[in-house]
Amino acid sequence: MADLLPRLETPRLVLRSLGERDLPALFSIFSDREAMLHWSSPPMRETVEAEALLSNITRHAVAGTLFQWGIARREDDQVVGTSTVFRIEPEHRRAEIGYILRRDQWGRGLAHEALTALCDHAFVGLKLHRLEADIDPRNARSIRSVERLGFKLEGRLRERYFVGDDIQDSLMYGLLATEWRTR
Image (cartoon, rainbow, N blue to C red; front, side):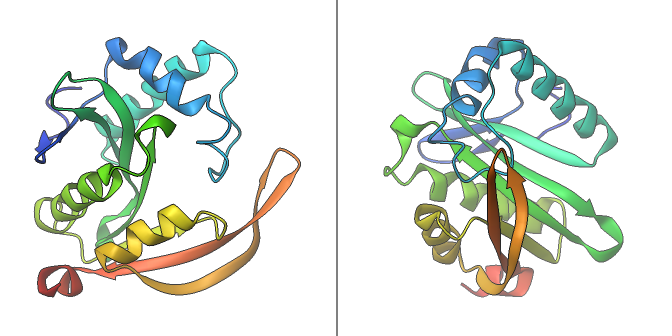
């Protein structure tokens, strides 16, 4: 998958293609109950789920329907999260973004750094006009991250997701290419 995704670099991070070597990191991230608290699916329980995720990421990248990068630290190339452009609608030049960081990496500004590179690629490289972010209203960190990037709150979707026994609302945020260029 290395040639399917461009390598995106920031001062502290590299957003790169994910591979077999990243399976332990993917499982660590997506099996953490607290990190997955605001995700639209429950935490992973078995490593085979990380293998299925990687297979799904690769399949969608080949099809051009979803691009998910590993967020790796420059210092050791260790994957500490992922960032994704998905639900891509070329005819409307729009897509959604998603991201997750390993819990021990929270509060360091890494999400902002990774999302800045991701948004820049989406608007410049993919030539999208609009990006959206779907956020659990209880996820204050994520709300701050997208607002800091210039995303605007556009609405609340009530009881949108069932995750296990929990039902979650969703806040929809949007960002236009013109807003990104003039920020």
